Amino acid sequence: MITIIISILIALGILVFAFLWQTTLSGITRKIVGRYQKRYGPRFYQNFRDIFKALSKRGITHGWVYSFGVIMAVGGIMATVMFLPLFGIVPFPGVDNFFIYVYLFAVGMLGMAMSAVGSGNPLAGIGVMRALTQMVGYEVPFMIVVLAMIYGHGTSSLSELAAIQQTSGFLSWNLVKMPIGTIVGFICLLGMLGKKPFETFIAPAEIASGPMVEYGGKQLGMLMIMHELATFIEISLFVNLFLGGATPIVFGETTVLVGLSSVVGFLLKYSIVYIVSALISNALGRFKIDQVIKYFYKVPIVLAIIQALIVVFLGWGV
Amino acid sequence: MSKKERAVAKRKKKWDGISNFFRANSIWMLMYCTGCCAIELPQAMTSKYDMERLGMGPMATPRQADVILVTGYLSVKTLRRVIYAYEQMGEPKYLVAFGPCTINGGIYYDAHPVIKSLDQYLPIDVYIAGCMPKPEAVMNGFQDLIDMIKRKEANGWRKYQENKEWYRENQIHALGELRIKDEFHE
Image 1 (cartoon, rainbow over the protein chains, first blue to last red):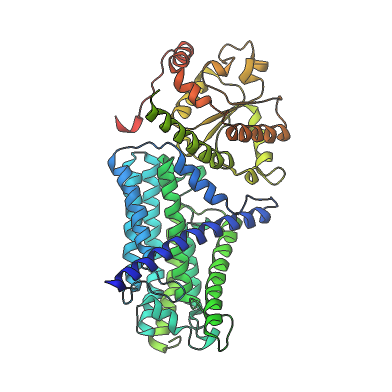
Image 2 (cartoon, rainbow over the protein chains, first blue to last red; image 1 turned 90 degrees about the horizontal axis):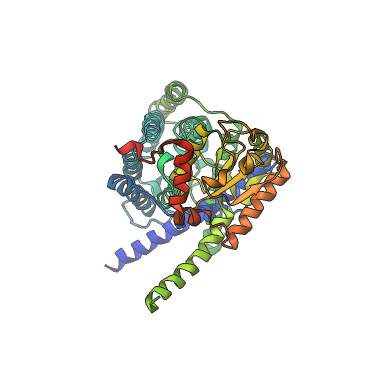
């Protein structure tokens, strides 16, 4: 009983940390992007202001499917974050299989899709259709790479996959062992985050921000919280799968120091991945939806199959 | 007013004070760019004046926006759309009017399809002077709006709620008919 309570407390701690960290980081990234465009940029806590302002506004509803779908979206994503291992701490030991995240994540996404379609706006319908089409595009190459990795390492537990990469320093990262797979993973990460070459389903100037077109006030605030948490899940998965998770940057005898430096190492990798993806997003234009699918089924899928063949038949990267 | 009502009002006032801090520092705009004043907005938004440092940003739809910018003259046809957009926005909502065309018609003072005075039809929080207003004036106007929200003086949306019959009468007088409805659920 006590272990379950401790697990739930750890999970709630991870949830709060994920929200605070990702919201702060996206504020800092807005500042960096501002400097990138020769602007001054907003305060680093601007995203908190935006979220709390949206929550303080008066919301409207388009029926119970619309309202319930938002709660389902936020709840599904919050549940996914609570299962996520952070800094090598697993909240529910034994329940950190990679496929849990894939399926729980889909609950949140489908909740949002249901709610957006329930609003009845045709632009929301187009946005949801594009988001699901794009999902078909990036899921296939990503899954091929991850399944090859699971085959190679012989485990599908996320914390074990991260621990395997921490055995012999930098050289045991999947970035070094499976470089082609890491490239595929990063391209698919851009697709998951909805960053700019693959921003088709948001497209503010084209379909008026797609699924979000009818949201305002409280529902929009909840969806912004959901967006920050979903970003946290996606980037954490990438860092844990390809960049070795929470690797220490200081080596030595002191356990506390090594532990703290592994926290710093994880957050550093996380920040670099997020900021690089934001900079790429601000340097590129937007694909059309058919170009997105053609691209994903042409370049990343071929690279993913090559990587899978290398892992399965040559045994490199195991 | 009973004791309970006074307590509720006091609590509401306190909550409004907290949320006005967030509202003042995070203003999302809906740009209704029909007139020529709209050409000053890109400079106010990009690297020269950088509106984002005040927490302002463009939004795609009326539902998401806090402030609607009416940039210049309004014909009868566009007034209808502005009213529909304004009705769709979530409260609290603000309206910023650019140039003399929204005050008295400006250079269109004798044009028959152009409405002369916008505040007969919708409540206006801030006017920005100039034909067209320079980007400095635009930024100054937004700073004024932020200060007004902080001082709880940007009450156009409350005025609109309280005097809805009067506004509606004027709107119908200008437009003939006005159908405020939920187009997606009928």
